[in-house]
Image (cartoon, rainbow, N blue to C red; front, top):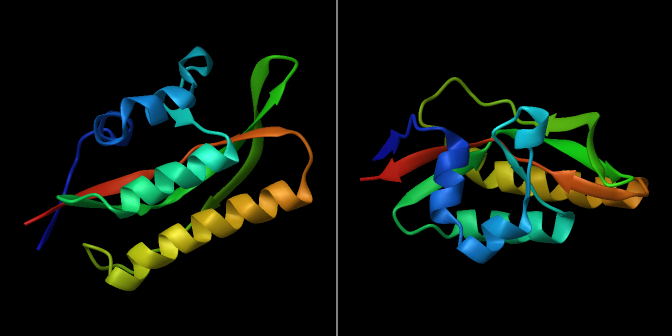
Length: 129
């Protein structure tokens, strides 16, 4: 059985990620956002960690892209997201597809664009009972 966690997803991310991975990210607090963004390789590492959590699972609902330009973090207005079926919790296939889509989006984005990019994610966490 999966029970949805209603805590802020950024708080949970900070709790479940190793400190050194969390600190590799870029805080977006200066932009008024309580989020963490990572470069593509770090983002992929975060996805790998989330897929293997022992006592909870996370579905990746989507995310945004930011660009580092002249030392500033700027929103590119590019994003991705998944469309869930109306079931709660999501199906095993939806969990799996959310990671595939996140990876594909980042890989394709880096291939199509030049620059120094950061990626955020919107996970939804569930406790495994």
